[in-house]
Length: 584
Image 1 (cartoon, rainbow, N blue to C red):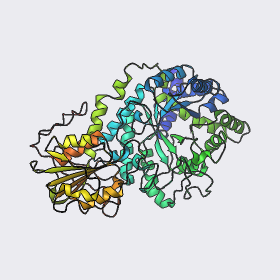
Image 2: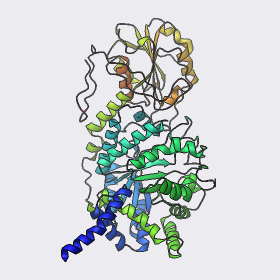
Image 3: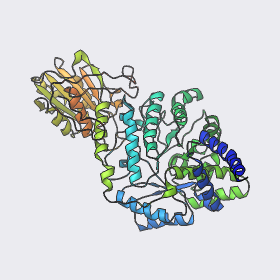
Image 4: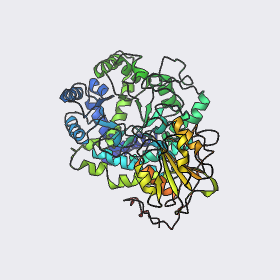
C-alpha cells in the first residue's frame, strides 16, 4: 500500500516538475519547488508583496541611510537590494548585516555590465560591449561573463542586470552606444547569450535589457521618455530579435525600459514599463517568456515624472512586472498593491506567480543555503590575474583594421624614419612606449595644420586620436583641428592612424589621405599596447566593425593582418587563458 501511495505521488509531482522545467528558465528540481512552496506559504500577504521590491543601497553614505535600509528590510520585508557606489569591503559588511536581519534572504543585484568596476572603486574594468562586439571569438565573451560571475559571488551578488542586448542603429544614441554589442541583431544575440552563459556557470542571474530595445533613439530615458519610431515588423526584425533568441537560450530575466513604443502600445502616455499590452500580452503572452520581468529603475525621469512614487510601482506590477527596481516609496507601492488584491482587482494567483519566480531565483543562486561573506583579500578576486589577462587578450583580438592600402600593415622595415603624432588628449604614453619597442619612433607634436612641415623628413607617420575613456558616455567625435591635421599630412609619406574611441568616431572622418587605419574602441593602456603590436606585426589583427558607420564602413568589415615572426616583443602572459602569447 505504501509503495502504491509513493507511486501515486510521483505521478502527480513528476509531470508538474517536468512542466515547470519546460516553461521556466528558473526551474532547477523538485526540491527547489518544495522550498519555494514552503517559503511562500509561510509568508503573510504583506510579506509576499514586499518580495516584489528591490531598493538602492549605497556604501558611501552615512548611518542614516543604513538605518533606512534596515527599516525597509524589517518593516516592509523587501525582496532585495541593488548596490550602487562604491566600497567593496563595506558592501560585504553591509550585505552580511542586511541578510542576517531579513526573514527571507535578500536577492542582491548590481548594474555590472563591464564587471563590478561599474559600481566599485579600485576594480579594473572589463571592456565595454562595443569592444566585445568586435570579437570574432565569442568564447572570450563567455569568459567575461564567467569572471564577472566570480566577482559577483565574492561580494554576495546573485543578480547582474546585464547584458544589454540593445541593437544600436543610431550613432547619436546618448545612453546605449558603447553599451551595445553592435548593430547586427544576430551577432548581438550571440554575444549576449555567451555573456549570459558565462554568468550562469557561476549561478549568477542575468537580465537581458532594455526590452523592447533602446537602440534606435537619440534620447535618454533617465531624462525623458524616448520615442522608438520603428513599425512592428522592423521592431521585431531588428530590436526584439535578440530578446527572442535570449529567451530561447534560457535567459532568466528581462528588464523592461522606459520607452514610448507606438508599435506595441498606441497610448503615448503609457511607457513600456507600465504597459500591460507590452509586458503581459506581448512579452509574456506572444513571446512566451516565463522568467522574471523586472522594471528599469523606477527613479528615472522617463517614468518617474509621470506618476507619484509608489503609484508608479503599483502600475508597474499591474502591467505584469515581477520585480519593481529602485522603488522610491516602498510603503505606498506595497499598500496600493495590497488594497487592490483585497478588493479583488488583482488576483492572488497573479501575486503568487511573481513571488514564486523570485523565490525560485533565490534558490538557484544559493540563497537557500546562505553563508556569511569574508571581506579578507577581496581585491585578489576582483582584480585577479585571470581578469587582467582576459582584458589584455580582448583588446588584442578586438583591434580592427578598416584600411590597409598596399599592405602598409604591419610595418616591415623598422629602420625607416618614423614619427608619432598624437591628437586630442595627452594620455598617449603607453602607445608611444610600445611603438618604441620595435623601432626608433620619434614623438612629433603637431597642434595645427600649419606645422605639418615638421614631418617632412620622416618616411612613416603614425598618428593616434586619444579620446576620453572616463565613462561609457563620453563623446567620440574628433575636433575639427584634428581632422584638418589628418587631411594635411604629407601625401608622399606612409600614414597610419589609430582611433582610441568608439568606431563611430570614423563616421564623419575623411580617410582618403591615410594608408592604414586601426580601430581600438577604447582609450586604455591595453588598447594602446594592442594597436602598437598590430602596427609592427607582433600580433594578428582579427577584429570586425560591430556597427554600421557610414556608406563605406559597414558592420562586419575587418581586414586580417598577420604577425611577423622576426619580432621579439612578448605580450603579457595570458594567465589561466591558455598558452603564453609570445611572438618571436
